[in-house]
Image 1 (cartoon, rainbow, N blue to C red):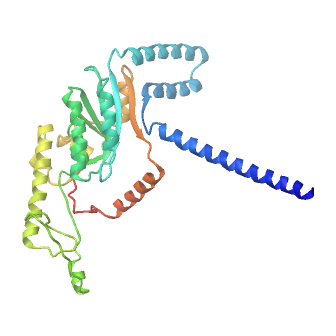
Image 2 (tube, one colour):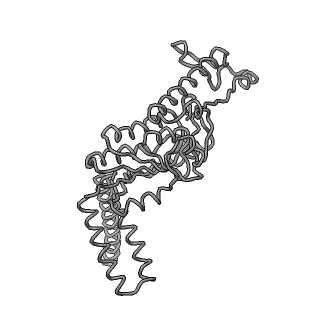
Length: 337
């Protein structure tokens, strides 16, 4: 009898553990399944007028009397409702671009522009707050092409540079109908740079041979480990120069008022000097411009977010750390703007 009792207790404990494990497994499966069905991307819209209204109301609560505050609040609400619902005076769509070497933000930029183009009217305007010191030629070429989509729809595009829009960053900025810049922001640097170390002599010193087989005379010019020749150097120099010519032509086409020969030297200028060189149209911060527009227009900030898996986020972080220590692509040398 004692045996049966002990066995029953043991069986009950075992069954409890098994049931608990099954519940945990089923719960984990349900959670994973739910995450798979959840959208991994979303478009976030923020009403900038509401932000300013909230800031002003918070301050007025402290400095105005009760009756005066009540009257002003009622007026502001009526005016705000008219702006945000009717769009009588047009709407401003704010997007932000913070560029790295690879112009990674272009993935979000293209989605934000696509979303805006589905609802924008000829009374509306797109406002880009831009910050980038440039990077890979093809990446910033694509970013500029995305902005051209706005221009092709005859929608006014204004770009503000609060800190820096140099090289590939300025390639994007020049697409705008109007460029605003903070007085000490950095603009220009219309040039192209490429650099690569060569370890060929080190390999020879340690009796290491490198076999490089190519098809096509210029499939490889300068390399990391091969023996670079004068012919290869000349060819690579020609490619860099041609990239520079394309860069200059793009700016000349989009900002004909600029003396391209005078500014395409690879130099950069602060906002005040850039205004003299007609690289920008007005000295003004993005905050001043947005606040001015909020008085009679509805302002909406459009942000596209893509949810990445944990491993993808970790890999992205590691990749950014590697970028900071090297200007080289994994497969071949790159030209940077």
